[in-house]
Each structure stands twice: as structure tokens, then as C-alpha cells.
Image (cartoon, rainbow, N blue to C red; front, top):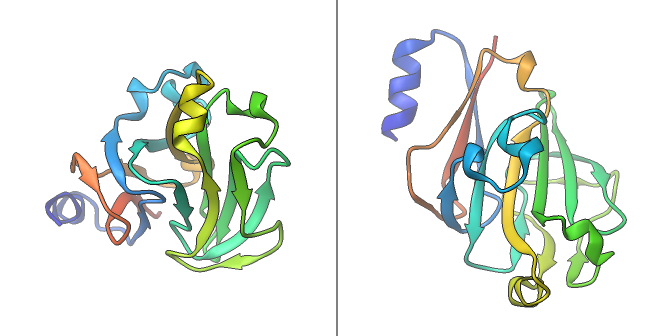
Length: 165
């Protein structure tokens, strides 16, 4: 992928790829309608306008946090990369309605594993933005977090490149 080759020519550091957690249209994190995410205060990352109702593991690692409302999940790879996936904006207010988890805190997941089902249509009908946001919460531990330059992603594609130190 061209963005990866460009990264390799700029950095002489090892990289790790993070896969798309959902199929859909790619949105720049700075364009997300949530100030904490858009400002990158929670970490560098990427967002998606989902075209399906399933969140898949973008990395292999441990489920370190599964919010009781199932609208957000935190993963940590074996290499220490901390990934937060947040389904929708302000969807915590739904108290778990329209979300069903297939994993639990402490589980080890593999890339592509089904984690959380959510009903995009029902979430939208309730007036919520169903943008899926994914950030590397420990971004400061790495040289850079580079989002893909693709506009549309499917599950087998990487969407973030983490440039290790």
C-alpha cells in the first residue's frame, strides 16, 4: 500500500499495522463531531461511517476494557499498543440498548474476530451519530500514528500504521 511505502521511506523504525474495525467510509479524526476525539486529546486515530453493524478486532490482543454499555472497548496488543474503539457519539446515553458484545473483559482476541454488534439504523433513529472512532490512546509512546489515505476500507485492510520507536 502506497501510504505504507511512503512511511517506510521517511522512518527507519519498525511499524505495526492496525486493521479496520468495521467496513465503511473513512473520516479524518479531526472531522469527528466530538471535541475530545477531534482534538486528538484521547490519541491519534481514524474514524468510519460504518456500512455494517459489526465491530471486529483490529489487532490481536487482550480486551482490557469493555464498557458496561458496550459502546466502547479498549484493547492492548502483545506489544503494548492501546486501542480504543468508540461506537457512535454520545451513545453511552443509550445504556447498552442496540449493542451486543461477543467478548468480555480479559478475553484475548485475534484480528478479524467479531466483538460487538450494534444496530446502526436504530441508533440513528434515536438521534445519535453512529460514527465509529478508533484511537491509539498511548500515541505519545510512538514516533507517529499514520492514518490510511484510502477513502473506503474493508476488514482485511490496515487503516493505521503505528511507527514504533
